[in-house]
Image 1 (tube, one colour):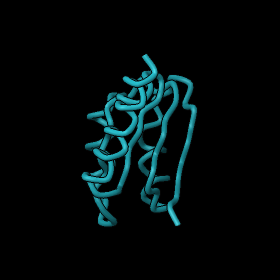
Image 2 (cartoon, helix red, strand yellow):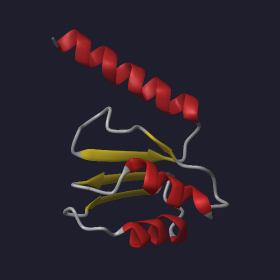
Image 3 (cartoon, rainbow, N blue to C red):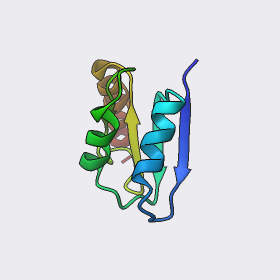
Image 4 (cartoon, rainbow, N blue to C red):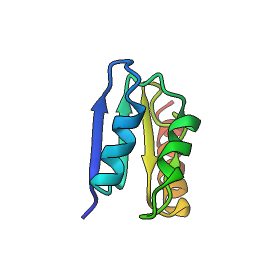
Length: 92
């Protein structure tokens, strides 16, 4: 079963807390709301000492106020994004 962490960090710099929770609880899906931490900085921190797999980011493609990070294979994220983009084009 996938472990998911969703957290509205309310523009606070909680980088170390987020990384600790992700590593301690082996989080597979991380979703942050109202984050002002750069996606690249968080991604580097998540992957710096994690032996349980690497995180990938969607870099705000799904929603501008949410940041998504996954530990799933890169190809599965591309499939999700492709389906989302196709759905968005059909709605317009």
